[in-house]
Image (tube, rainbow over all chains, first blue to last red; front, top):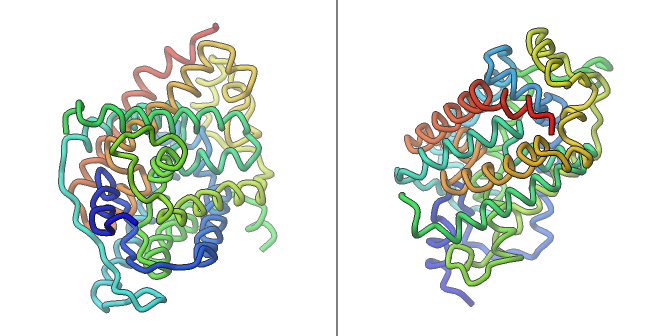
Length: 163
Length: 185
């Protein structure tokens, strides 16, 4: 068994999204995340967020749609996080909700620019890649595997890259 | 009601629903919303190769893999029946690159198994995917982790990352992509 604290520290490396829960659960507790994922995927498709065309319009300033989607998502997220903090809302297991502040590093600029270039070509960030595969665009499996390869190469070169 | 189910949802319906994922995941189990992490967990689970960055207990992050599996299932369940209504200027421009089919959310003429055998297809699907995977991890998150989760939590690094995403996207789409789309091989 790995040291939990050390493990959390390692997982927090270069990531904004950390599983802060210290509780151990049986596997079936994770099914609720599958359901949230399904609902999330449905919204992605119904709002055409996963459309290559919508992303092209966004970067050509030809449509407000994506700006509206991301902007209103951020606004609702901000208000929700504020309420959670203000009211000290806990998880359904009674655990305190923890949000770690993130440190700036140059990777957010270099990596951000690199991701932006890829986003402009593929018209998809990681989430939409999964949804596109679901809609039957099976060739996107290649793009997803390539993204996994990109993540792996980053892990390999991490110490040599400027941060 | 029927047209609401059939037609594409407007941004003011979809955006808030996506935003609600943030508190939902936090309340369900202290999980910070983020999707690109799943790519790292796949590396940690399948090909860690002794790289320290992938040597952690990925089983604790199974929730994230189930979440993205759910996104795939969502795609299987729902079919967008109407063609994508694309801005006429974009329609005109894309026609010049031989992209005329707007029936699918991803253009068939770019993303298909056949076009994987063209230079244009390889750049778009293989190189594009690589940049997405490498860049998101280097930046520490993607549109969900930085732009939505990070900004929701008022994190300056996430704002910097989000601006960088947008700059990269604008440069690619307006300055570089036209040359890639013009490739006929």
